[in-house]
Length: 125
Image (cartoon, rainbow, N blue to C red):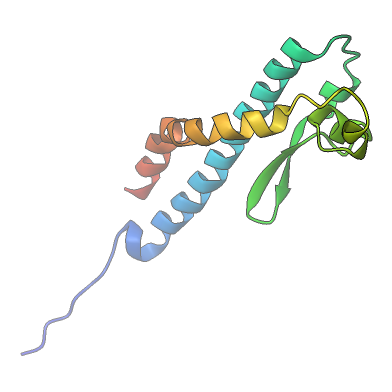
């Protein structure tokens, strides 16, 4: 006697995979938004005479399956960060804003992603 096994539900019809992909992308975007906000907060506290030009360039950029937070390639960005060639020859060593924010964001990323998890788990039912 042979029995037929029917597999159905979100794991078998693709809903779980689609929800997981949407969650991964949404979590990246949420962490990216937090990172941009954090960079702005640090810059607000360290820039002596901000013009707004540099801060307007801070954004997230998609790179394949990940997001990058950057300053849109503004020419004096490396100097402000402290990684430019001029930092070796001047007294100004940089603010290291992106490096500091990246380190802090690593510790917060899990909590940020967890905040939105529920709405994507609901899609798997």
